[in-house]
Image 1 (tube, helix red, strand yellow):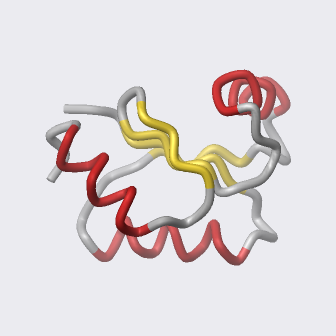
Image 2 (cartoon, helix red, strand yellow; image 1 turned 60 degrees about the horizontal axis):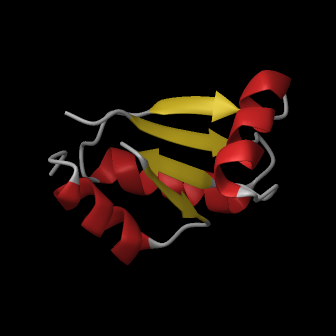
Length: 81
């Protein structure tokens, strides 16, 4: 099964929405606070060319922002749901 990561910050309301959504559909995920983990922040930028959060990683798929439809599709494609 694919690993799900949420790159976020503690002050980002859309990050909270993304994490709450994953919790509501019983998807386990790793929360990566890029404001505290510079290496993870650099990895996120390298992979997505984006500096904004949230970024939801599902397997090798990266979703920038809170896009419920894209999250659902990536979860299905990666066998998480």
